[in-house]
Image 1 (tube, one colour):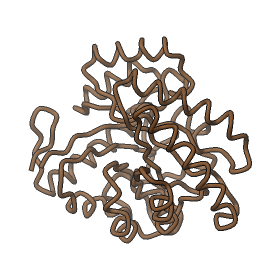
Image 2: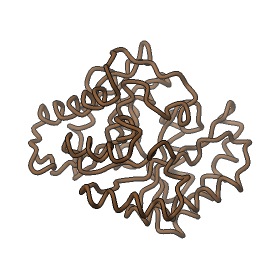
Image 3: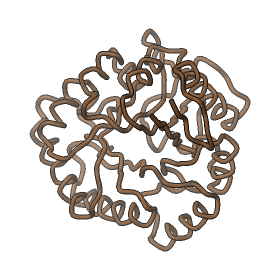
Image 4: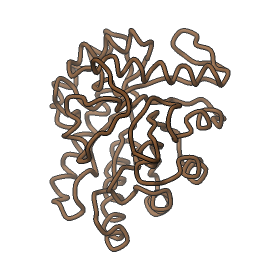
Length: 285
């Protein structure tokens, strides 16, 4: 069995060339694209995307997924404009050589009451994605419709073709048990965010030091997989644009780069503990 690593490298540096350098230093062969030189990936022009793709190719880094902000607006916000942004994002995915786009299921104060509108919008996004040959991966996130395992299951059932991006820390910060969530959603998951947190406080910690049961997640893998490091161990440029909650951390790091290194090392440690050995950037068991 093989495990490959990807990462949200914008947490190490805002500068995109530096992101590539950090990934190479940490022996991470892939990237989840989100912030590039201070600009969200979904806001790039096609020409900009081609230029960034050339930098990635030169650096030997492949794109695992587009970490888009799609679906991270209020359920009452303008959806037609959002669909236009979605179509642009799906075109950009092709330029970057990936068919995977991470999405959310809309902020709502009344998940049950807004359920019908959530399903309607998610189906529209899914239909548009399919027309572009793109697979959507719904990430569980705080304060959106799909912030609990049960509602994530409903989404996967109601929106045909939608898949799951599993984030244990986000479940924990919603008061959910990460292990139970994984058991419920496991069949629909092949996109994992490696991020851990403490259930008691919601503080984000390195993988294996919280209640995210990252070791159990890795021990349950039955097929080849890709694990995406999303550190969130310290504030980074652009966080306030992608999350409307305050980032809470237990530990302090001297720089975003050092926080990123700690996150990568924590995952490598868990992989080793589960019998994986690194060979040319791939973890094999």
